[in-house]
Length: 110
Image (cartoon, rainbow, N blue to C red; front, side, top):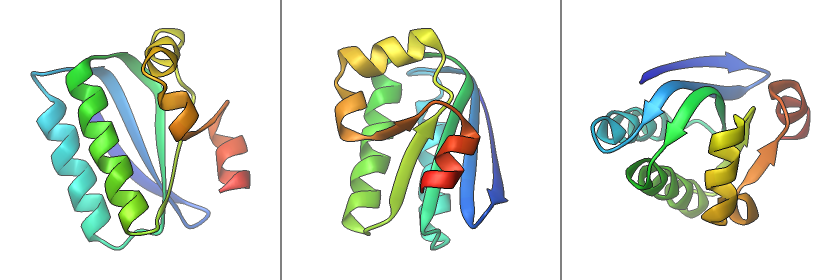
């Protein structure tokens, strides 16, 4: 898994690529906590290059979501690949998080 963070239109865009599973979900958790500690107000998780997410990955995403909610920060997702979108749907993450079709749509609506 590879994680990069950029700033676009006052939104922190975290791009995650590869696979997020039990072997590396702690890396995502660490990167998310660092991002949140920097006082970012709007965070977009671009999952366009994420091929797979396991229950361990879902857990750290949920923890990030709860942290954002507690701190009243905006969090959204975009560019979900079909398999990841299906996993989000099965786990009902698509009902608790804002999910946009692509990055431009997300940036225009955050």
